[in-house]
View (tube, one colour):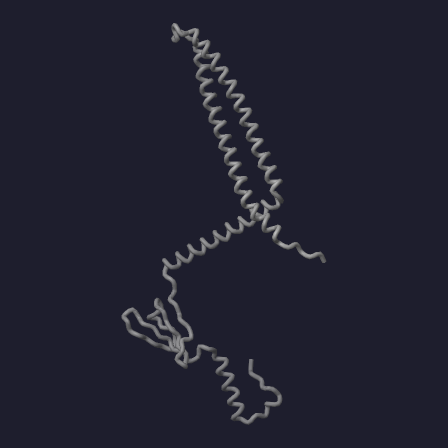
Length: 225
């Protein structure tokens, strides 16, 4: 767009008008006008040019202004190794941000679910009671299996004079009983580990919630409008 001078300057003297156009041209030329680019190439030679130097595209170049000051430092493009490191750092930062966001969501849901310590203690007791009920039932079944084993042992004792003549069905019942007792013991052990896991989870939640509860109580409520 052509430059327009204010209406009261339209009658400027020709010399003054030329000066105005010269200043405008310098402004439009931008800050890079008159720059000199310098660098040291791979052979150790110091090069200079009025534009970026191709021989130093893999090296640092300096853009020097007319006054001799450094306008900017032009870094070389990153190597593939540097690009990979930068990408790895970006991935790590993104993963850390995602974990932090997930942690904030988890804490928000936790605080909404357990607004106070009493509600958290009730939930702990209910969760442990459910597992304990399963353990109690499994232990009763284990006791029944043990009583069955004793009866089978008594039957087998009657065959002590010649165990080889013991009925095959009796031997099968003994083997099945032993297998069931082993499985039942493993099941009870698994449930005991589940109890320990629940205790550890509620302990960790309690520690987090105590921090959240303290923060919530320390936050002043919004003033009524």
